[in-house]
Image (cartoon, rainbow, N blue to C red; front, side, top):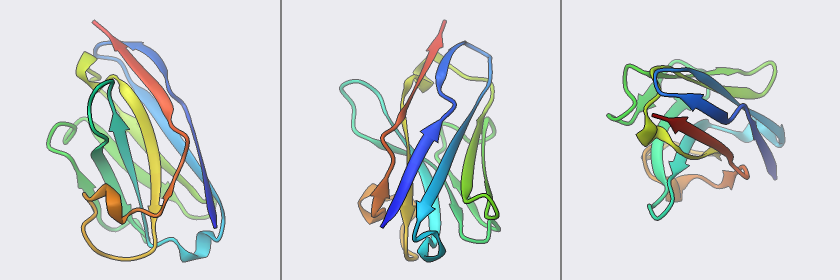
Length: 124
């Protein structure tokens, strides 16, 4: 089992920044890659970003490319999402997820473990 705990969400004005953290515990040695997803009210959960196990490959949704950066610190079993130039449409609950295999990083159904989420609210 893997446990994921997100932190760092909050309220920020448009154009501001936030950094989300996701701390993993349990069978962390089995994690192949990790990702961030988000879900706005009334919408489906959507892919935001993902990073491979060694951190050498990253993937982003077009809507956040150039504004968000995903990174990981394997020594701390932690993944980060640096969010800059935030927009009101970035408002959502952000979820951290872990997967044990390769595949389609953009597909939420391929992630086996999820955190409880952290709220990000961007005011205009």
